[in-house]
Length: 83
Image (cartoon, rainbow, N blue to C red):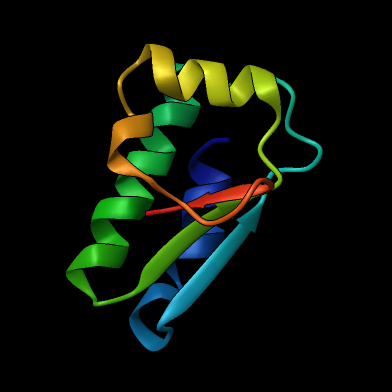
């Protein structure tokens, strides 16, 4: 996750009510990735858009819990979480 992801997703936020990021192939995330998710979350909320994450692997879920970011999310089922 990086500036490319932010640039590609953020352009859809103003005109969308819901954006879903599928994290199926994501097995590693660093602090830049966490920062990108939070930037997207803040931008989406500011525009009244819902940003959802689906297919989150155990390792990424553990990272979100460890960094206390998991508490920002509401569960949407066993395969994903929703902001």
